[in-house]
Amino acid sequence: MNQSSSSFGAYEAFRIIVPGYYFATLLLCLVWAISEALGHDIFIDGMRLFLIFGGTGLIAGLTLYAKESTKRRKAFQENQPSQYLKTKARAIADIPVMEESDAQQLYFFILNNHIPPVFHEKIFYFGTIYHIIIQIRRTSLWFAALATVIAGAMAAQGVVLQGLGGLFVFTAVAWLLYLLNVRYNKADRKMQENYRDQICWLEMNNELVESVIRKRYTPQR
Image (cartoon, rainbow, N blue to C red; front, side):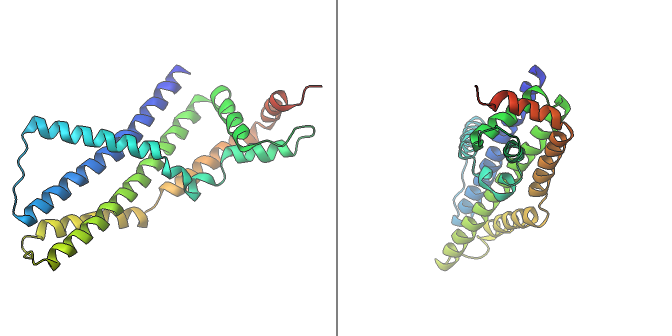
């Protein structure tokens, strides 16, 4: 259990660090591209740059993590193991209708107490990859759209095209990263495969699942 908890903590940390510092890297590159287009050189000494980059990445990562917007996606909400347990409980006599929150608690109880640790690693891993990829996709889209607007506004204001070269390159790279992420989208599929594997385990351990449901939710007489 301790090993599982430490793995969970490590995966959660990656969910903060990777999207956060990806955001910070794109922001830094965009600022440099804009300053180059305007003919202003930005010089920040190494320690100050390290502190700014480190702080921006951490704040961005915590903000993205706290929003949990990736959990509202269809690929995350559909076919969850907790939904399987909720449906399973309906088919058992004398079991009251289970609320979604109860089904989720039941799922985590079974996960933590009965599903083998090797499954935990896979669940944490694919869940982390899903969140990171979706955050990278969205961040790429935000910066690509923002850079496109800024480049268009600067060109309309008469900034010479040679000066906009760095901004054009940044815009093209951001759009390319976004489009590649959409084109080769494995995050949603892997998340659903992750759910199916867990549901398969629940189906193969049907007697255990029914026993846990009856023990926790059979009304007291």
